[in-house]
Image 1: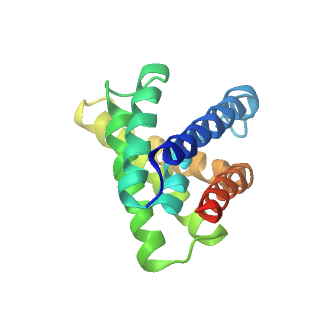
Image 2: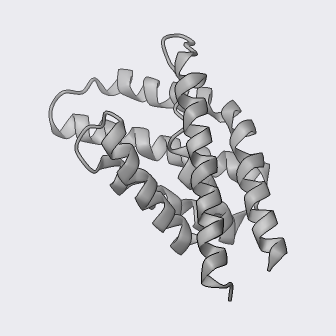
Amino acid sequence: MLPKNYRIFQWAVYAVATLLLCALQSLVLGHIRILGLTPFLYPVLPAVVAMFEGANRGAAFALAFGAACGLLLPAPFPGFFALIFPVAAICSAWVAERLLSRGILCAAIVSLLSLLLTGGFRILVQLLTGRAYLSLMARIAVGEALLTLPALAAVLPVYRMIYRRCAADY
């Protein structure tokens, strides 16, 4: 078991890295437009962390990150990201622990899963409120997911380095 101070340091490093990746989303990826779509990196972050850290710690990170995103990003309803991100994190951890080894393929699959889960729940909320065009929203969700996957090249090395460095120290 790791000392409590070390865990605090580890999650502080994850928080700083996440802030930098959020800055990448805001300053770079948010200005990329392909066929009217922009990459949406936020669902990828808790999925990749959960892939490395497991279901419990990954879901806790996803809940905190989802709450922060809920305060800063437009969403279908308050608490949307705080609800969806932990579900995506648990699914991602399950895929990493049971189906695939942690690596680029696993990261791509869990990222795609998280993006599609987020998009799917957005569609579901819009359908339930009667304000949805299903085919258009599905096309947007899939296009956004495919457009975001190349950004995984920036996310995976950062979180892998933190995970390996912290695992190597203890």
